[in-house]
Length: 234
Length: 193
Image (cartoon, rainbow over all chains, first blue to last red; front, side, top):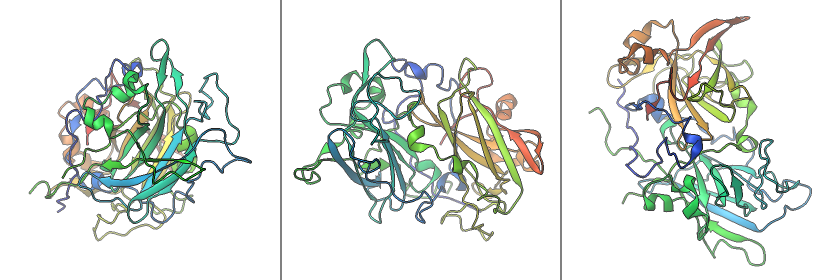
């Protein structure tokens, strides 16, 4: 007997579709058949734990991974992982990866004609504290061109990967910067139909996070799906 | 008050330097985990049946006794200190991935049902604005007949896409092939989770 409490379902317009012709790569990769609804079982409400340090020592300062400091504007990005009911998500793994200040990724397939920075990998990870908080020091990522359409540019963004407590709570998203003029032209950002949901992906400049004479501060809270309030199947 | 969840976005093509953890493709703790070791291999294909070289998979499963390493699994079955049940592997240039793991035990389903041994699988990639989720079942398992999730898929050909294919063995380690077709002919069943 196992009546688990499942996770809330996403609401229309708050998540992207699989097929979005404005983002060309979806055309041959989006499932064509309807998804099969899966009522959550023990498989979906459980998931990997990271509280014991399994993911290795935190890597939260991306400006200290090389022999000297990377090029670019230093920034702090910090926030809280919480669920849609406002509950913090402690001891969960947050992974971050991004382009360097010139808009180039440390990846063999990134052919953008911009310099790599020998002092910047653009990768970090941290396990949230008991209040669900995380914090990284990094460099403001550059915008970069991509071949989705002629003269297309990606908004400045940082990739975030978050697990949450269960298999069903997992999300990979992108953090955007307030006021970036590229966002209204970026089909990946625009793939989320509802404006209020899109805005969830835009960080906020936070003067209380900035450090005088040293780094800009941006706040980015990440909201995961929450649990249903009553057990399902009853 | 409800907060809008942060929407999903594609992992893009350039995630390996941030997410690659080759050691996470071995779930056996270097061979110390209890149970029957199995290897899972497969390829990821797109709608043209071209390999997808810029994807990664994550898997989640119960241990050999059928218990998840998670506080919400309160079954009176043994936990295995050497088995966490989570794996990750990127695809290579030919769209190939692989995991070394333990054959999972059966786990409870909803109500009084029992789920056949299975591994939850999800795929992230450029072009997937949201990851896709599927399950790997074992073709010879007698519990498959009564598995509620398999049973919810009426089309036998589609159901077949959730079954790994026994493909010999590497020494004592049985090999299961599990290709994932994102779109089109032979499209894998994906779940709305």
